Structure formats: C-alpha cells, structure tokens
Length: 64
Image (cartoon, rainbow, N blue to C red; front, side):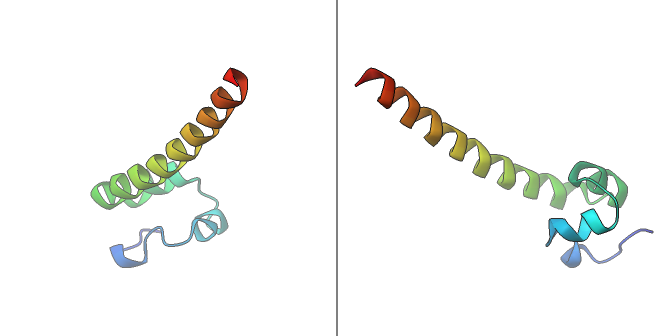
C-alpha cells in the first residue's frame, strides 16, 4: 500500500518494521526519494559521527 502523505513518512522506524519493510525497502516502496535521501543522509551522518568518535577514543587510548 502506497503512503501518499510525505509528512507521515519515516517518522518512526518501528512503524516501517510493523509494515515488514526495512528502511531502504520503505524508501524504494514509497518513492519519496528526496525526503528519504535527506533522512538517510542525516541518519548516516549521525552514525558515522558516532563511529568517528569511537575510533578517536580508541586511537587515543592506544597512543597514550
């Protein structure tokens, strides 16, 4: 079933899990490519920042 209101798209990832879709499948399924890409970039930026901070801590721990 296609969602028609972009304001309700992707607000809750558990909502998509209830639909039996992964995040990327939901993006392709709903076709909100602009909104989805923007949100995916935000999610990716957040997790890559977290990963970078973990790596920096790890590097500092080894060098000291």
